Image (cartoon, rainbow, N blue to C red):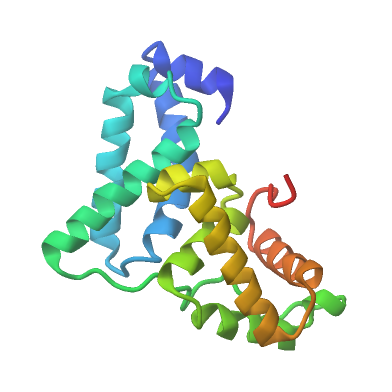
Length: 199
């Protein structure tokens, strides 16, 4: 979160709020597609969370991590709408450009065969495990932020990640280091921000 941009929003600057909207719309939409393929439902949830952010901006300013609040609020709103519609789906990565099938130059950690195996291995994880990996590697959230988004303890977040990586490691027959490189490179190439996995 850009501090100056957020300060301008706190002061009621609508142009700054518009900048925030454009900066976060894609993040919310990408995250929302993990739960539903209904674009109208996702966009409706996005509109609602932005209205919430604007109306509660002064309260949010007091939080340690506005980023995790944003994701958590969007997740709550979207899941609530899905429950009401009884259309909640498993968190999945199908039809996403996050997973690469081709790239002109790959090193050992990025060959297409391994990426395909990684994609298949990710599908074998539980929805919660896939969600934690997505938030960690694609969005670059810290374990504390992920815990806030999912409304679980930091310790539980670590456990979920450890089990996820352990499962992937066994399926791909690679070291944890190689696995992390695979995940980081895959998400980095997909346009994600700098991963903070090694904090």
